[in-house]
Image (cartoon, rainbow, N blue to C red; front, side, top):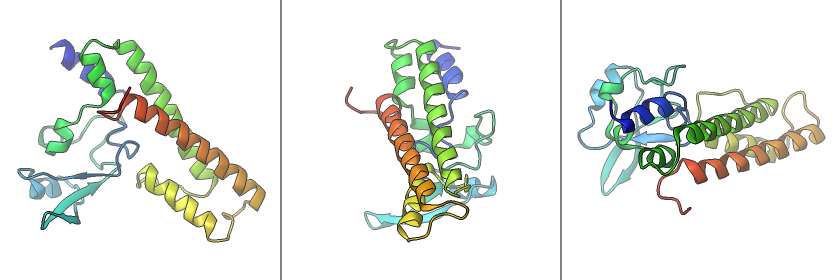
Length: 186
């Protein structure tokens, strides 16, 4: 196994942020992706906004193929976007710009931040882990703006929980921008 493949296996199987709804809200299929095969494997596809006159197919994150061990249930048949994506952290390790140990620490940091966002969402009554974090955050914001505090919370408690959520999302977004999204300025 090459050192790049070693880094990929070590980092990706510890991380999963590109598949669990943290980095992305959905994955758009490309020409050549086997949509019917993905459906047969259990992936729920939906039509997306038309691009250049063509309807696109997508599937939502978190991906239904992501296992608890960060392994993809249909790895060999995954779509092009999934095959082609390497986060900036993996790229930096593969290029020798960062050690795998440093990258693993950054992954642990991002996962802790993701967990803090999920805890804050749960405090506000959002337990829908089938949706990406970005949609859950927007939904919590809209719910508070509707004029009713979440069940079981006073307005003061809801405001404090929303403040914690906002700070947690901000910290996570900083980490993701710094370490995970490709082509971001250093």
